[in-house]
Every structure is written in structure tokens, then in C-alpha cells.
Figure 1 (spheres, one colour):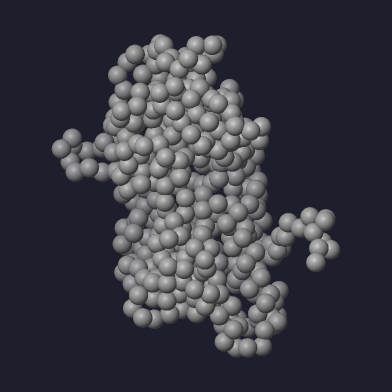
Figure 2 (cartoon, helix red, strand yellow):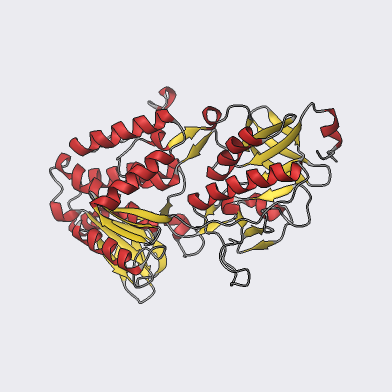
Length: 439
């Protein structure tokens, strides 16, 4: 067992592994270490939020298929023996092995023997002019709720407007990006609008339209071409206006200008493309590529003893196939974040025990997307599935991935309920008492 170099660690009764980040990578690692660590070691998880967000289901929140609290899981309920601190890490001292975290009780100084960087990325709204000012990103639960409220506001306003051009602009919802997130958001929006229009009798059927813009010649580049084409057919069948080879050049209050000179008039633009590093990454002075922390084969960070990185913030070489094969990097997906967490739990225990670590390697189990009512596309191993079987697989997989039994049961009940009853059209406004009569 190693001797801590941090002076503050000498007075601790236990050695400490600090994990920064409460997403899939961080929480999976903490839970796995709880089972594996030898006596005398403690895990401390630091996260800005008190919950883990199940990001693949944010589109379901947009479309009111589930309520927002059903796609998050409280971190404290997920951990058994680990300590949790809700706070934002503002600085890390690699020499003294301490970090500063801004918490509800002020700045806390926390010492560590091993430190794991497992935080995610932020939305990048600078890749297209006007995106930051006029588009709605989808990265957080708050984003999903805001988009849902905006959609309901637009539909309600259409009933009150008499100008035909303005009604058309209000009724068109544009989604930029035809990857997994974009396809699922477009599908959810189309289904949601189809279901809620009955409650707005002054809105004609043809006045609500979803347009999906994608800059290449097919959807879902993460999946084989045949599944991308299948997704396109399903979306078109649901009434989605799919435009391939359409690159956004500028976004403004009136809609989206395209690079080919065309334009799409819209009052609501949803962005599912572009990520940027967490601001903390840029302040650490570590080697970066593509805005991500470069790791060694065993997920350690070269040059800093006791430092490791996994998840979206890390650039991890995926060691599968021949040793002389071209470099293949793990994609920033939940599946690979979980696999990295399991691999790092093993390597940390090996390092603590003075044994050799092993390189990270994971063979993708596939990918899935829901692309319409009772329709989906999935690549499971080498098997390509589409239609109802893929949709059922998609729901079953994400239901099983939810980290607590309570969340699984609640989401299953809500999904079952939505099969037979209309979507909730409640526009939630978090107005406090003293704001009701404010001028």
C-alpha cells in the first residue's frame, strides 16, 4: 500500500480516492470501488449536481413521455459506503494532492491519494453564428424542460395570431443534427405535437411541422447506413421534414440560414450538435487533444502520479484488435464510460496492491435509437434490427440501465401509461408567491 505524499493525508484514518464527476463514469466507478477496495481506503465523489442524469432519455422529457425526475437518480441513493460532496471543483494542486471545491458551506479543501477526473463536456454553441443567442441546446434536464415549455408556448400563441406567415414560423420546429440525439428529439417532437394538437382547436393540422437538418447524406452516422436509411423512412412517415446535406450557416430570430443559400423559417431551433471541454480541463495544464485529456493505456494521466481520467473528458485509446492496428479512440458514449469505469476500478486496486495494471479495451455492444411511434433501429453485435423489435429493445435496455429499482418501476409505469393516454400538456412555471403580483 502506497504512502501518501500529501501532508494532510497523513492525519487521515483512511486513504482516499477522489472522483470528480457524478455522471455514468464517476458513479459507476465509485460503486465498483466500494466492492473492490481493500480495508483502509475510502471513495469520495464530488459533483456539481446531486443526481446523475440519464442523458439518452432527455428527448423523452422533451416529448413528455416521462417526467424530468424520472430520468435522474440521486447520487446519495446510488452510493453505499462512499462519501458524497456536492460542489464545483475550482482548483487542483497536483503537488500537494489537494483540491478546492465550492460547496454550500463555502470552499472545502479535500486531500487525495488518487484522483479521477470523470466529468463530462459542455454544449458548444459557438460552432454556428447565432447559435448561442437563438438556439436551444439539449444537454441537461433543465434544457429538456425549457424546450418542452417553449413548444407549448409556441402552440398556444399560434391560436392567438392572425398573421399567416407568423403562424407558420411559430409552428415550425427545427432540430439541427441528425445523430442519435437529433433523431430522437425530432421523433419526440413530432409525436408530442401530433398528440397535443387536439387540445388546441384553433391550430390546423398542417400548421405544426418538425424539420431535421443534417449536413451529410444520411442520418445516424454512428450506425450502419441501412439503419440510417430506415430511421429516415420512419421519421418521414411521422411527418418529419428530413433535409440531408443541409448545413446550418447562421441562426437568427427568424430561423436558420443554410450554407447553400436556402433558409428555414422558424421561431424555435433545437441544437444537438457540438461539445466543448469543461472549463476546469483547460486550467489544469494537462496534455489535451481534441479538447480531451490524453490518457495512458491503463487510463492514468502521464506525468502526474495518482491521476486518472475516464468518461467524456478523457481521450482514451481503445486497445482492441492487433497491437499494430491504427489508433482507435473510445467514443464519448455512456456505454464506453461505464466500461472505462469498470476497467479503472480494476487498475486502481491493482496499483494499490503493487500489481501491474492493464490497458483499456472494450468491444462495442452496439447502438440504438427510437425513431418513431413503436419504431426504432438497433445494431446489437453484428445484428441489425429495425421496427417494433428495435423499439422494444431500446426501451428495455435503457430501463435496465437506470441505476435504482425505484426509477425503473416509475419509468415503466409512465411508459405503460403513455401507451393508452395522451401526453401531459402542462406548462410548468416555477413562480414563487412573491412573484405573482410583481409589476
